[in-house]
Structures are given as C-alpha cells and as structure tokens.
Length: 175
Image (cartoon, rainbow, N blue to C red):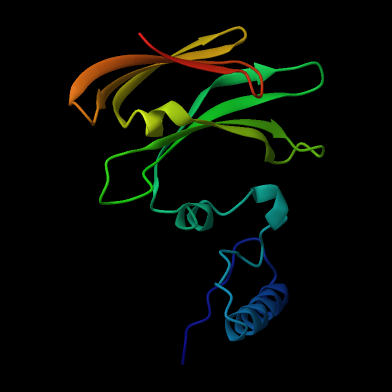
C-alpha cells in the first residue's frame, strides 16, 4: 500500500481532494491526447500568469531556423518593442541562408509580444551569403548589425552592414 505523505500547510482533506481533482484532470487530458501539465494542487498562481511553456515553444521551432537574436529596440509614436533577427537555412543540402528582421510589440493587454512587421533582407539569399559572425551596435533609433560572411559563389570573405530602424526601415550594404 502506498505511503501517504502530509503536505506542509495543507489540511489532509484538502490535499486529498486536490490530488483527486488533479488525477481526474490528468486522466481526461491524457485520454484526449494532451500532454500532462506541470502543476501542483496547491499552486496559487493561475497558469496564464506563469507565462507560456518554454519547452512547447522550443519544440515548435522548425529545424530550418538557425539563429534568432534580439538586435535592439524600436519606437514609433504609439508603439515600441524589440527588433529581432531570424536566420533560416531553407535546405540542408545548400549553404544559402535567408535573413529576416522582425519588429515586435506588446499586445494591447501587455502580456505577450505580437508581430508588428517582418522584412526579408533578400541580398543574403540572392548574393549567396553565408553569415559566420555578427556584432550588434544599438543606437537611439534602432541598431546596426555588422556581419562577417563568405560569398558562396567565389568563397570571398566580406563584411556587410544592416541598419535597422522602425518597422519597414532597413538598409543592407557591403562594407
């Protein structure tokens, strides 16, 4: 017979009821094919206040995403938020990459980030550039990202500069 363990600060009857409710919830969830939530019956904070499950978020990230990095922040008259870079390698057989800039802002309730805009830097793919390293230089109006890269068509090392401002404001050039 399993040994019963008292839970500190929880009356025995309440603990049994909480465990019974938890077991019922887990059984229903598992029967429906849902993953078991990481909860305790005496948790006081609602699940929504604890934020999203990082494991679920990471497992949903496609394998083609090679790199995600916050590159600074942006602001306009009514919104503000972080800017991130997303580097994608569309094919495992090809070294060519695609680079995207994304502007994020807090949703109206202020409890999660939403996507404001996405812009591809097509030169990365069109010029067949493989990014090896980068440096970010934030400034008051956005950021500057310096990329050290190799041009795949001729194996030449080059440096490129990406200037990022508010949504839609990007400039990419060879240095």
